[in-house]
Image (cartoon, rainbow, N blue to C red; front, top):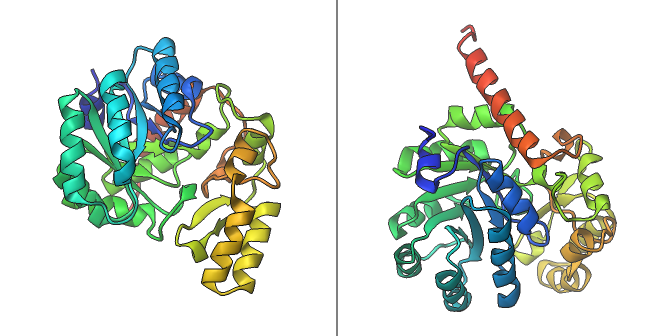
Length: 323
């Protein structure tokens, strides 16, 4: 049994959590991560209930190790998801937050999920939400910096992790900007108990996304990562392409309200277009700033084990640093 606190809480062997990504984190990927000793998480937060159920059942067929499902903390969605969770009993609920987490909402549903035998992880992008998550009963808090792919705020991982480590008594997981053992070691130095990675798993052998989407990550270069959607209040980090150019042009041309309306028409279905259909120019390839560090498609176990071994080496080398 690992001595790592995150591993003890979640019942996993290695302190690595795979970030849930819509259309990406399906049963084969989540199961592969769990089989490799980490925690795989199904990206089913906005999926229809029947899809959520089938993904949970498919994952159970592929692994008997702990895995999670992501749940979006939107009040009107929680009763239906809770009904599924209590019936299917995924070992972990991964609560994806919107800004301004409600402590009473957390206490209500976290209590129900705990009574159902599930552990609870909360992903927060602000210190306030991280503190509320613990007060609401979370077992683990992930703090995601703006380096990460997908929906972001504007604080860096290097800022959020030490603040969370100082304030919380439960395990803190660093997310955003972690591609290898160097990023992991930096997170340890900041006070993290574990690591969440998403972008690196876009380019894994077991992933079911189209080859073109995997190659878009592998081929990404420095400064080819942009944030769109500021006008909508939901900024999103993705790899620069024809779609992002069009979205940014809209935001430069129109005032916020009009830009947001026009962007909806352009962006609707864009993630599915990239991650299911393989159109990586007109679809959204949501990946973090570390995409240039992802240089090849590798098996999940290799990604995890290589990064952890590199982390150990870097931490050992740190003791030799001269002041």
